[in-house]
Amino acid sequence: MTQTRPRPETGSETAAVRPPARRRRLLSPQVVAWVFLGVFTGLAVAGYQLIPEAASWAVGFGVSVGLLEVGLIGFCLIADRDS
Image 1: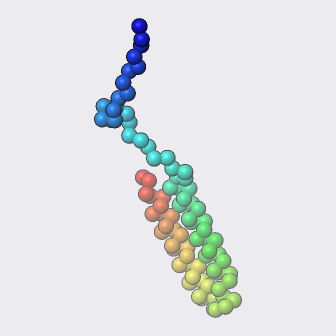
Image 2: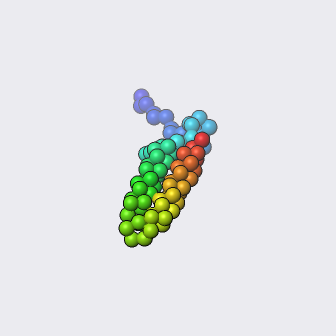
Image 3: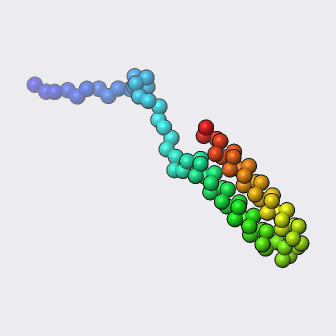
């Protein structure tokens, strides 16, 4: 007497039973947002200190404020994407 193996189910039969596959993320959006903000804050500090040597202090200040704005807007957009 030989034993037979059960037939494997097809994808259409198991689709209703199996939960949908979840995408695995390496980094959460919050971590990416904080890194983004940190990078642009660092660029703003560097711009504030280095640009006045080549131009006026107002140009360095304006560039640093612009970089901080980009960093904060990007932080808000990235952090809010998951919620």
